[in-house]
Each structure stands twice: as C-alpha cells, then as structure tokens.
Image 1 (cartoon, rainbow, N blue to C red):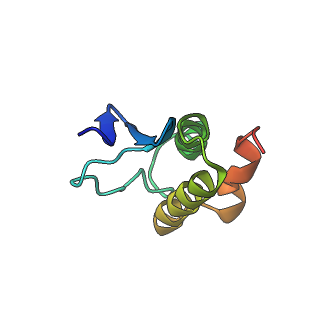
Image 2 (tube, rainbow, N blue to C red):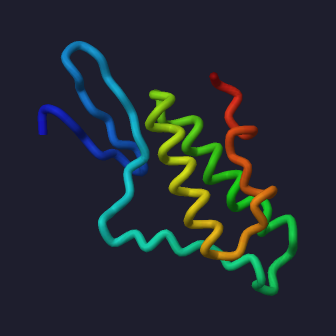
Image 3 (tube, one colour):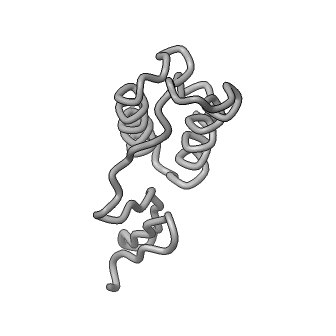
Amino acid sequence: SEKKLPFLDVLVKKRNTSITTNIYYKVTDTHLYLHFDSCHLYHTKTYIPYNLARCICTIVNEKDTRDMRLNELKTYHLKQKYPEQLINYKSYCNVH
C-alpha cells in the first residue's frame, strides 16, 4: 500500500507529507495477557503492563491515538484482574 505499511508491531501511515505511527496488532491477536492471580512472581506481573504501555508510548506519535491505545490496554488488563493503581499508564509516558 502507498498509504500505510505494517512493520513488526508498528503501523506506519503516510498523511500528505507527514508520517504517523501507531501500534499494529494482527487480526488474530486476542489481547489475553497473563492473569494477575496466576502463580508468577509479582515483579513479572507488574512489568508486563509497564512494558506494554512503554511500547505504546514509544511507538505512537500522536497524543490522541496514544491515549486511546493506553485506554484499550487498561481495559485488557482490567479483564485480567490487574489492580487499577498498577495500570496507571499515563505516568509511564514522559511525553506530553
């Protein structure tokens, strides 16, 4: 396509003379992450949402899209019983 190109987990879009980036998910992605009540070490369960949020903060270059993606991620983790205070993603992004 001349307008957009998925590459690994990044979707690159061409808009006139600018380029925007977004997270790319395959259509088969179920967004099922490790359940918080699983028998894994606590630090493992806390770094999963942190690293996924940092990926979004790094890849997505438009603030509105980034906020939308972070809210989606929060919904996915709430379904997996992650505590809400652990998934306060806005504090993970150092960009404004």
